[in-house]
Length: 469
Image (cartoon, rainbow, N blue to C red; front, side, top):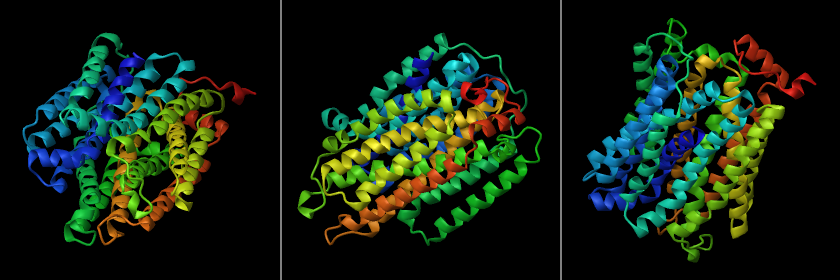
């Protein structure tokens, strides 16, 4: 069961980042500008942000196994359609279908909580959470070699194989949980949230191209902010909300959301800054002159560190709770960006930064999911994890937009990003790491977290041994 859930999560996360290094190639092959091809990324993020909370809520209502089968089927159809896409329009539609798989993570964690013995839950959640970070790294690493050896179409054919296996595993190897949260889907809340998220992410994603002072950008930002505020008020008043906003009052939940926002920024900060720096010509004095494939290999230590630290975090969480691993993750990421902010002329600085980034992301993602799972009732697991996933997606969009703006607004006469642009980008990402540390420090202690969980109706976790002591 865990294997199939892992494959589904790995496929979704890989598809999120796999096309980014190949946008120029895809645009050229389809006869469109790279700026138009960027909609391949934008459509995916918009779809994932809107559909994740809806499908997560449906999973809690009608059964997580049923919904994850539908989600993986949509992902498979979208991936095959993308591999066959003859033009940009079809490719964008395919990416919208793929975005539905944003719900794989919250649904998977909900299934793990419902089906596995309590002593295996934290470690398994740690592994699944790390896999989502790993998939994003694998996408950046593998894109260059796949495109160079085959074609961009294989960026979708290869993940399609994993998705097909995961789908068959979900159909034949995952039991249906008896846990349900009966009710009806909040259509009003769904509509308001969709308007808010689409407006906000569209403005963030296109703001660099349109101009941050452009009427469209400002208007969408205002519309998105207003819609999200209205959504909160509506959800506090409806009987069966799409997202129970009362969950946000728990310190274990809101601190996890702040850390998720920061780590979404940090993840895509490193996935943009490091490959771009490595691929710049060495003649500039600060570039390394690497190819796309070579620069991707420099992220392999990051991916390996994510795997190891994600599993280690799950073990730690069983013993001491998620707060300490969350703090360790924030400290590791802050130091990871501090090193190249102080100097990035040597390869060892890039490698050490990447390893620390992997440790930080693996630790934090595992801790985030566990912190939320142990703060909300089992019947609201997918709903709560969905909100955290959307918040991390928003963080990723903000990180991508901010770093891209820094690199494009500080350029040499030849149009290449200046050395100062990278230094500023690393400092900005280090600052976000500090935000994550502060939020993690504000998270409840082990005893306080258990007390809050009991107040919230969480009754499926035994007291940790260290708490009893």
